[in-house]
Length: 295
Image (cartoon, rainbow, N blue to C red):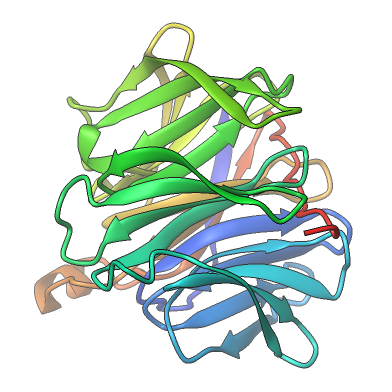
């Protein structure tokens, strides 16, 4: 299924995360959480523009306005003007929980922005999953979350897939696109026998899930209807964090990685840790959605 894997940027990111492809411009946005950077990678030129902020940033998604991004900082959601690097607060998040920060975030097909939180000391069930609706309403959708991570929606928007990393499971929620209401949840992937932990996630046109292995040196492809793994993509790094489809035909899987917390021996073994990789696939992915202008 996967033809080749290549390092496209030896970024040496501390905690590369949150890749999001803008099909309008051919730019891959991603973040270095601990490096406090929002990055815009141009595959054509190889240029990686960096916007350095003054706090950790865990997610970035373009808006329908091409000059404006939405970013998740430690304690809030902000608009980021890409040209001027100006930040504008949209909403604060968990100001009453100083040991929490935001983590993975993604936009649904309606233009809503979903963002999860986690405890910085990795204490369990201290986080939550929130949704910023197109009318500006900010609502808690799930509670007692430990490490809110991968999000994906099927092409018909009947289901939302979700990862709370320490549970070692992917859950599929019934999903109503017009209301953002989450219904019944069922387990569709059991990661307990896998190497590493499930981190970020994306979905392809066939409805298969692609899951990054934190501590497992790979991305794996799964059939959520059968709980069967279909393929492994091995990478020359230890901590694989997330992935998304890009390129003109959405058959280039961009993969972020991390080097944070690794020992000198591990870094010697995996010198490309923190790099941005690309795998060419035979199946096309789903196009990333953009945040609505009305928020």
